[in-house]
Image (tube, rainbow, N blue to C red; front, side):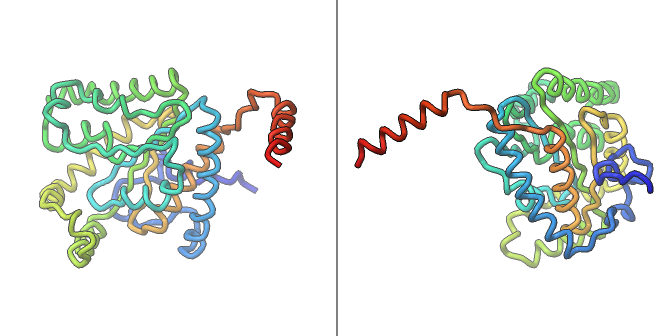
Length: 282
């Protein structure tokens, strides 16, 4: 019998079977049905919540989860269905949009670093510092030499987090096909509750589809490291996207093995004081 491969290894960006194309976006690696995946995701989310509680109490290490993807890839949905089970105490979500005038006056990582997780915390980036090698590349917002330097600077930044503050970094590219993106745009138009999400920029950026695919492929190649791995999640099927992200987050937390700290007080003495307090209140 061969060794069973984890889903994380299967979806790792450096796996030769992983591709940034429409055919891959529709796949569901791992041989699991929709019904089984939906049931498993609920169970996994509960385990994630329990481990996050231990991580918060332990206060020794942190977890940074980066979500990237084109418009309508499902970043918000992933946070809501998978990561929303976490306790808000000890968990933060930061969305990175177009830099403000003040942010634009600083280096591209200046606005990101303050949102990195402290020990005991889980931080989720909805878009991230990778916008500065994706959008910046597609729209030629900086010179080619400066852009080339940014990949190394990102690797150094993520290495700093892992080596200096015991931060574990996992990065997800939620990969949808061109056809699925248009279908989701149509669904937004048909659902008044989603009209607030509609932007003309969605269609403007869609015109650069092929260039974005090239930009993502290059970013994955240059910044996938053992300390901060990239996972390419086929995201045309929302149920599979949620299941895959949940599985990998759970595998990561289990490998981190957070444990509840030992009591800092004499429990026997506290029990005596509790007993005395009960007697006094009778």
